[in-house]
Image (cartoon, rainbow over all chains, first blue to last red; front, side, top):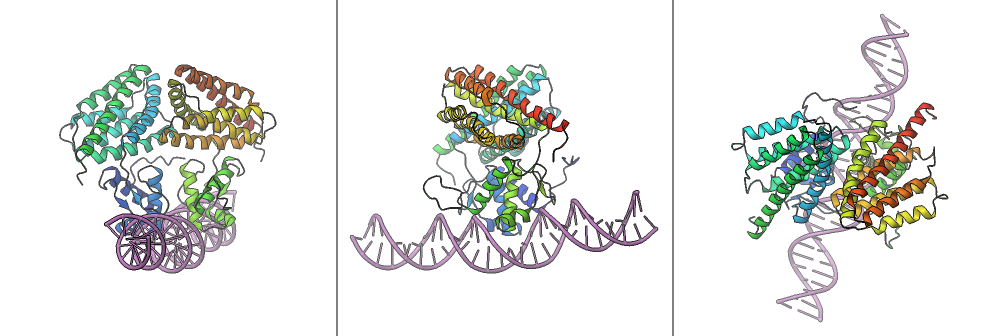
Length: 228
Length: 228
DNA sequence: TCTTGCATTCTTGTATAACAATATTTCTCG
DNA sequence: CGAGAAATATTGTTATACAAGAATGCAAGA
């Protein structure tokens, strides 16, 4: 059924292309949190019809990348502390299952080690956005390697919100990826050792760290007052 | 449709009502698997415009309740054995996290015991569809009680497909709900005992049973040849 | 001055029509 | 009987129009 797209093959339909573009702009923080996205604005910016823009916004809303209620205009959400915790609780749930499954068969996903390599190689000189990309790619590879369509689908949604939150901070601070790289290595090690328990522990520790980094940044930002 | 503005606050918008109605028909098996759902058919059946019907179908597709590729008409899917296993793997992932979280604080969701009660009370005389409803309500209550918006959202999607699959079998066989009720009780017991490990084990056992029932029914059906 | 109420305006919800592009079916011809 | 081409069906996209809900601002009254 899956058309086995042996290569990138950019979005076939217009709607798809529009969706991808807007999505990218949102998760990369190009559209600030709180900013309003009206249907006509999208429609005119991209020269598409309003129904097309509408479909796009609805899709993004379903994924949690936009918030909107009936008859009100969509806004880019800014996750508060509680929501970040909820997000990471869900994330841990999904990724725990993934690494446990991988460790049980001691399968180390090649795509994950590739993502690690690219993160290590260009650690300092990469733009923060690319570091985020590599991080996301690593975790994505982990879950994808399990081979469960539904687990991957859930994870994709979660990572979307993670990406969004990270993207919103990316202008402010550049965290040293050293810790992250080490934590990733620990996870891979546990998987290749075939130790599901340890793999889950390493993962949980890694995600806790990441979550606290995010929450810390949020608090710092709030105590400084809104810069915009 | 009726104004009925007393409490439940039925679907406010037309789109919402349409979506709910079609969804119900699909998960209850009123629309047979493999049946084609064209936009114009929905539009004419409900006397709505085609864009409205289109939005409805797209939403159902996103939830896995319909399958469709570009320029091809949507069909109600029939999950094969592999997909049922994938579905239950994902389901177990989510529900394990839920019961573990509940057991950690020994919180027994009132809604879950209510669902259990209604299942026990009218075990034999309820229509199979209602048994399915009660079963779904039980598991739904379990996850909802955790209080995680995102976990609930993921679970909702999964339960949709579960409901769909159960609904498709519901004409053929009426399984004795006795086992199910006992297994549910075991889970609740482990939660109220504050034993996360046992709660997860009971849940895993319960889901394995359910999964095998489904797979067994699927095989039986296939070896008999398609009745329709 | 503060608050209430109304009206204007902005935005979204829904419908209709039309054309383009693609899939599927059917029919004809070799 | 098989292969290719026309015809049909279905979806993708756009344009337009009107209705309904929400927000804003202004004016009037307490």
